Length: 474
Image 1 (cartoon, one colour):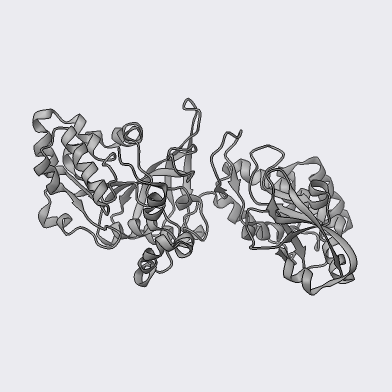
Image 2: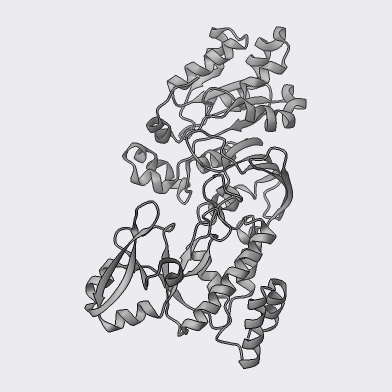
């Protein structure tokens, strides 16, 4: 077993794959074609995604099979040595193993030995590439060496795994199986570009979405994705079956996915479709955060009670009082809603809009340090809207959000962290929240329509509410 410190794992974005993953999900898909491809892993770790193939090959044939059908690469010498030992344990002589298990920085250069002139069969790339988000790379000294990788032709990509995918595209790899973060399928700005660039060249044959923790050192949610290159470059709707696998091994959810280029091939497009079609004629405009700089510039004689969203002691946020001028006091008091962007794991703590006073027993939510999207966030409206109308918005927002979550299995949201919760916790983006707020039709309804609107929300009849929205958009 490779012993690498947590710091080193983060430095390289590595998450080593158990052989069980290969045996359960990958081998059944490829076992009838083992002699038809060269099996490659450019980010091999200890070789657990390729070398188990040898167990299916008769011992007398393994050496010849290895010579012609297996190539493994990694950027770390320690991993190369471990992979060679792994091959030797399966009957491959060390001198032969060393020829096909090679040190290479595959994010920077595609191995020359994989050129067609060297190979007897086409490449089939099976890999669990490094995952490191560009935002983390920029902030951490240990990972800043990767910044240069995101320049030139790679500008706009957001993660190391995306560079691995696009390198395969550029090197004409036709068949691939990738274990990658599920934000590839469900993410917004973080993965729009890679989906747009990749999926006009490749179709997705099938997919396993793992809704449980499979890596010891990270809670990153992943999926096993089977790619096949198209015969022609084409932007088209992709349709395939995906299997969701949760903590309960006996329960698997099978779903047919349809990914449209109109929505950057993102799953859960029903959300985007709704906010596009239902945007109000005169949408509410809003912003987020009450910052300490605003408090300091508006000091006065009227006390306002706040929580500090940057100071959480494990059970509650610190409460503080500030004397502010009347204008800021009115601004805080007349904007009583906050957004919870992350599910708590309990059914009454789902992402949505909430009353500041009801949950925290204060007037507002203060940011004293950096803003964090996962902290409680106060919402401020720039379009005239009464407090009562805001509470109606809260109920509308949460009703529609839960309806969309139900019909999409929350796939327009980002999986947050795996836990022992009764459901998979999700993150609802701030930009998504703004767009959903902009569908609230309060400014265009006459008195009779408004009364019906209120009754539908109170009854929690989401389907009738949707019908109402479609027929009262102007």
